[in-house]
View 1 (cartoon, rainbow, N blue to C red):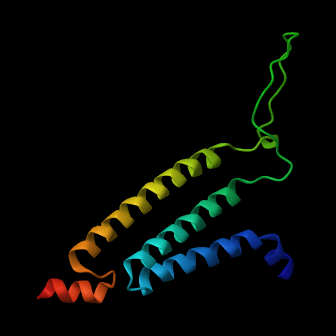
View 2: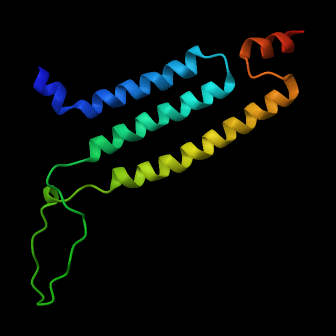
Length: 127
């Protein structure tokens, strides 16, 4: 059991990071802290996908063409799948954009209500 935990420590760390982010989004009342929690949660998801795409003993999926015209069989198991890295680069860009929009909205809410605290904002809006 301990060997299995040690072998998959990166997944344990990913779950801890994701739970910290989820807790911050659900339990915190401050809008800025919720945005930070969202960014932490997104980081956990990205680390999860990168961990899934990692393969021991693999090489880059760059194939060289032989100059003598001979064709060699390509064994896919010897190469790393670049799809997870490509998708996670896209996820990083989307995460930064999402965080930027969320912080901009939080700033706009603060300008109108003079508070980042959800309860105070809801109280002011209900009046």
